[in-house]
Length: 71
Image (cartoon, rainbow, N blue to C red; front, top):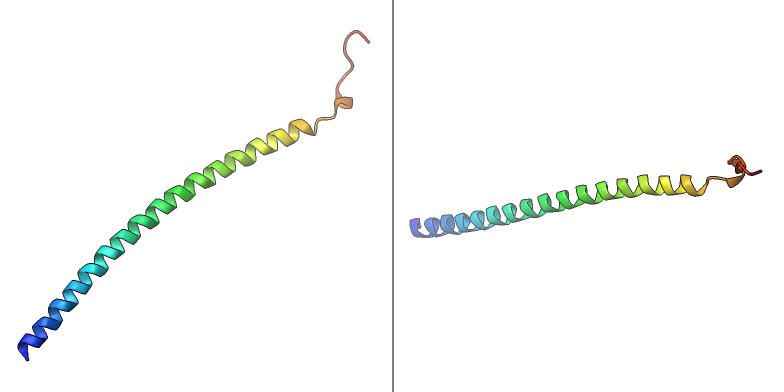
């Protein structure tokens, strides 16, 4: 009976070690995805700012400009 209990304990230790390794791998993966997401969010914000500038520039009505000096 003691041998069987020791075998079960060893099995549980092996499973626990495997779960620990899996958890570390998942944690590493999540961290990498969070960094990538932060980079993507930054790029999106820069693109939004550029788009706003472009839209503002294109919305400029030439009729609002004063006439050239030779008029």
